[in-house]
Length: 438
Image (tube, rainbow, N blue to C red; front, side, top):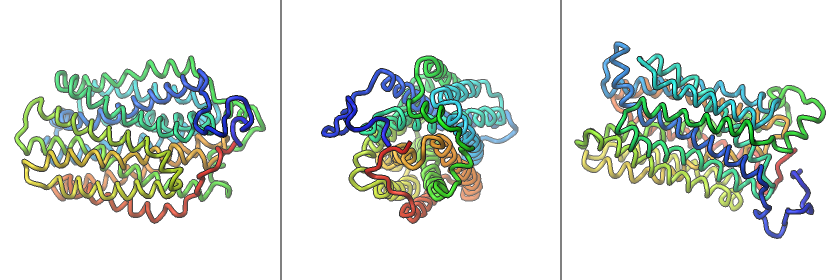
């Protein structure tokens, strides 16, 4: 069922995608988008400053700051961050019980505070703790923002809204790259983490100005529902919960292999090509900006692809592209001669980003598969499973990097995950042409 029937005022069946948005829907979207943008900025800040931060903190922790040890400890810290992301499944039942916007505001506040606190780290263990705690907030923001837009926007606009929302995360990549080019290059990695305090203002606005979606209000004031966490494992939803958890696991492994290791790869390639000083963070910023532009375009392409090829077909296109591009970037371009590797690697990042837009598919598709009473819980749970598995993969990558003495080949092997994903996609529910369920 839709939020309102097709013959209601303002719903023009002849012109899909043109139902006017009211002030609350517009303000709520921009609050969710800004939170998601700052979430992406926060995530990438760590990737961008990983090298310089670990070069300073590892010796203070009694560890030599060699390229291999930076890759090893960076993988361990990524894994702990992902564990924090995984624990964010707690936000789902909270969102289903207390509301989307209130819970969204709390997730933003938590990740902002602990990102800023990371600037105070004196050793690698403190940095790990702050990133773990920030991860708990970051992980919940996507579930709350995606659920809010799906429920608050008109039926004929929510599919495009999912793509628009997801561009925020990757716009955050671009903002982080710009900050690294300016603030990071001039003032160092601690100043970058302090920039992560900015989302506090978004949290306050969200809490005070944005109302809950009418769909959730009706559900919350209706017949009391059983535990939403139990609900997603009921026969009605069990298969969907399992399949979407697997597919999100594949996507998250790809994100952390392809996008998060990209800055570290550029740093190592830049040093190998003879670059020094500010030229290195400038190269990282350029590469991250190119990756971001490609991913934003990939997000915007999700809605039309999903309508043309169906949800399963569109995701298969993205997964196949990611598999190819991870191999090309980290298994081929990374090992080209020193004078060639850096420009080729950076150029390929556009296509890696384009197919990395697959995350917008889940923002569109996942809410279509669950009712309002369990929607936030399902979103948070499915994403959290992927983060726990992603944490395990990063522990494995850390060992592989140490054993191989390189980050390229171990990361290239993560493309196998997308092959597994392509085998699982046919088992997913196809929801093209269906309305968001109540």
